[in-house]
Amino acid sequence: MTRLTVLGGLGLSVDGVPYVGPAAQRRRLLLLAVLAIAGRRGVSRDKLLGFLWPDAGVEQGRQALYQALHVIRRAFGAAAIVGGATALQLGTDAVSSDLIDFTDALGARALERAVADYAGPLLDGLSFEGSAELERWVSVERARLAGEYVDALDRLAVAAAARRDYSGAVQWRRRRAAAEPLSTAAAVGLIEALVAAGDRGAALQAALVHESLVRLELETEPDDAVRSWVARLKGAREPTPVATPVATPSSGTRPGIAAERARAQLARTLAGQYVVDRRLTVGSVMATYAATEVRGGSPVHLHVIHPHVAAHVDADHFVRTVRRAIGVDDARLLRLLDVGAGDDVVFYVTAPPSGPTVRDRLAADGALAIDEVLRVSRAVALALAALHRQGLAHGDLRPKHVHLMVPDAVVAGHAVPQALVAPAADGPSATDTAVTIGAPAYMSPEQLADGARPNARSDVYSFGCLVYEMLTGEPPFGAGGGSAAAARKLTQPAPSPRQVRDRVPDALDLVVRTCLARIPADRYASADDLVAALLAVPD
View 1 (cartoon, one colour):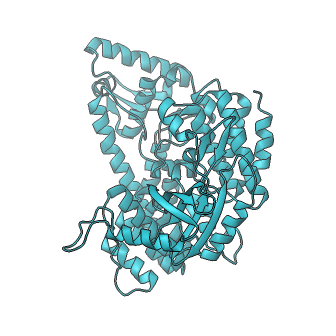
View 2 (cartoon, helix red, strand yellow):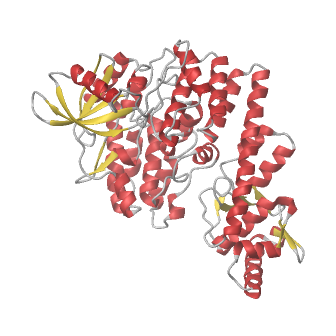
View 3 (cartoon, helix red, strand yellow):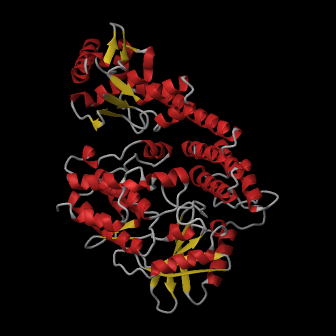
């Protein structure tokens, strides 16, 4: 059976195998996509000409359309496209489509089936240079379908809560929040569902994550509804005002006074150990400073967890976990030197990294040479293996944490996400995290859907994302890693880098696809197994 996918991207397969024949030429694929979007309404031939061949003359456009129809029907049968002299439709008896399945499921009120079919925004990631009319039409349809998807999630969540299936309501609300991470309504819905399920810790985490996203992406304060929930979950009666870097100081207040106070407190905590020089970076979880070790005079990088995050971190657990990581001696891991907590300051210290990161190289040059990918991949896998043998996970493996050095690479950022996870009596699979750290583009499906703790198999998944991007220039489920990428991770099979870059060796392609398996049990169990598989790839 021929299968056309237009939700979350654009693809064509035959019996589950990606189709790469002449009908996969871009305009022919877009022709099929337009027919799938139109559904049983069909599309006039004139409209198709305006969409796909806007700059061609009438006769030239008609000839191009005729040729495209001929190639598609020859590849998939005469029934692949049906219709008369004026309008055409996708022949669903010969070509199935995820969009038509989604629409049919909504019509039948089979909401669970509908949201399973929705793998992301319509034709996500495609550009339509030269066809403004097609771009406008797709934008309208994309917004309509996204609205139907989130409406279905809302209805599923409400129905689950009505029958007191609170865990089910939480799962639907999580997906709703993933689809619109900046939506106050989605955030409040998830918070309320978690509270109803009795998981106030996870509700507070969801609220704090939403606050961070709003501040970072919109550079504004979150809605009062979310801030009120934060205050209630913390036990306060009223929302606590949060200072922002761009806030205008009130009369009589000097700009930067809060930052100066924080730095003074940091200096007091670190007195006699480190002299803070300057701030290097600020993220949603921590700030990094250039500093100097007092005793030896060596330069170091000091990583300080933000106070609003540290307030929800088990400091003893954080210190114990990072100390375990300090004891892992491997030249491919950036040296962790120290860790501490006191006076509301939680920090750890590393050697200053050197060499460009994989992110730097990708931004400058695009995909890496295959022999370099193999060298770097093996180094990263060996670094992960050293951590996994000690029961530790990296937890946030992505291009910015891999530094390219002679002869291969050094991995930074390890063990900290695991240290930020609140310890629980339920065992390593529990999901009550103090804070979420990581980029969705590199997180595993179980982390995105269920908030699962970082572990060896989630590291293996992130490794697969990293290697795929080094080979192709983009993450496996699309650049940006937003809600569309998250939806594709939860619904689509592992993509093949060889389909993008045909020089990728089959053995390396298999390693990447195994790492990217949706189900954790289908991946390599640990980085030791991963190392063995990589060493079997011919140089």
